Every structure is written in C-alpha cells, then in structure tokens.
Length: 325
Image 1 (cartoon, rainbow, N blue to C red):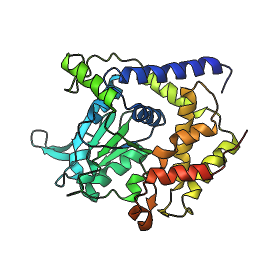
Image 2: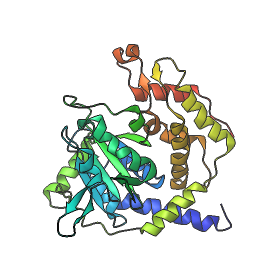
Image 3: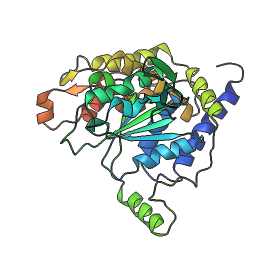
Image 4: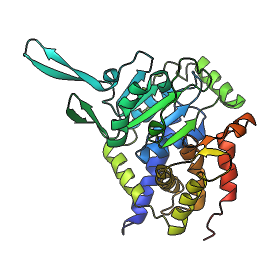
C-alpha cells in the first residue's frame, strides 16, 4: 500500500463495518452468510446461496443494494423460462419502422436468480457472459451492465423434482457457495418478537435502511482490497489446498485454478475486516469452505457413508500444513 496506508485501511475497515451493520438492521442472525456475501461483493464475485424458502434470501439482496442505493432485479427461474426473458430481446417498432432493444431484468446492480436450477441449462447459460465479462449480447449488440454488479443465485437443497443440475462451467463462475440454514432458537425468538411488535418487516421492506456508502466508495474499497499484501508462502498455501482437492481420496472432481484465485481475493477482504493490510493463513481458512464446496464432487463411496462436502474440506484443511511465519 502507498504512504496513505493508515487512512486507506481505516476507510476500508469502517466501510465494511458500516455495510455489515446496515444489513443487520433488517436481516437478523446468519452471521456467516452476511460475511460471505459482503466479502464476495467487495471481491467482485457472484454468490450461489443454498437454503430452504422463507429464510430471507430476497431480503438479504435488497438490504445489500439499499446500502449504496443500488438497483435490484429478481428472476424466478422456471422450466419454461427463456434466455431472452433474462437478457432482453429486440422488437420491431411499427411507429419508428425499426427494431429496438428492450433490456431484461439482468440490467441491474444485484440480480437475484431465484431457484436457478429449475430452468434448463440453455437458460442458465444466459448468465455466463454477464457473470464473466459484465456485458450482455442481444442480437449482436453488446451492452455493459452497471457497476457494481453481482448475481446471487439460490437453490433449494430439499426439492429436487423438476430441477436441472448446474453445469460445472457455470458453478465455477460463482466465487462462493454459501449455506443459509434455519436460525437458532434464540435468533428465531428474536425475529418473532420483533415481527409481532411491528419492529421487523416480513414484507421485504428495506425503507428503514439509509445508504451508508456510495458507488464511488465501493469502487474505492475494491481498489484498496487489491492492494492488500499476500506473502508468497500464504499464496502457496492457498494453491496447495486447492491442488489437494484434485488428488485427495474421496474426491472425484477437484477444484479449478479459479478456486485459488477466489481464495486469495476473498482472503484479502477478510484481512481488511480485521484491520490488517496483509493476509494470514487464517484468512484463507476462513474462506475455504464457501470457495470450495461447490467446486468439488465426492466419490459415491463417501456419499453412501453420509460424508458431507464441508466435512471433507475441513479434513483436507487439517492435513495441509499452514506456513508458520
């Protein structure tokens, strides 16, 4: 970092804390999910969020967008959804005598792709270009989407009837996969208490949120993140973890180099949250689960034994030696 390191660090740490605190005004509990979402957003990535209905996924998206007065879009994925329903299409304007483009809901800041696995692969693929290049092609015309831009796609882990597995190429474009679970008893009691006293909205209303950062400040925050130092030993540690997924017993498909990149950029944000200008091995460990869980596949034997992907990753982290200095 430059000579203004302390000022930049203070700004970044304060901005991250303000965004997290603002989200928690309307989204109670789920600390790990909020952390995952915030780190991924600052790292310019996309999130695959898995959880049953009714846990506040749409509220979470709207709360994040409200932090910077951003726009949100929501697409309910269904088997009959067409790619043009996502990106937009050209129509002939009879009055003007020419074709004009009508942009789809993808032109927003934060796009909620609800139950993405309920649409066939061809429709899912409509997101690939914009997720990778932040641009959309409609009838040979290319449009840039606004910045910041993030896709947050959801999956229901229980209902599998009428679903289409996400292709590996698409899964790999999600920087992380985060799991949103039922709240614990104390948190659920708090939500019910607030909701029944009119202090907690169950109608996805985020009007109570006042923007706490600007788009320029988000871009500044992202720029600061790229300057967080990563020692060669820590970078090597992240790479060794990812490479181990390709040879470890019980894993039939390992993670791609995108996982190594995602681990480092996410770890940089984690370091800023702790008011550090450098990444330590614990930062890499903190982001390993969301970065890796959707990028590996277990062997049939482990699945029969009831082993989860997270358990296998945690075992792997225990086996790969972290640098000591």
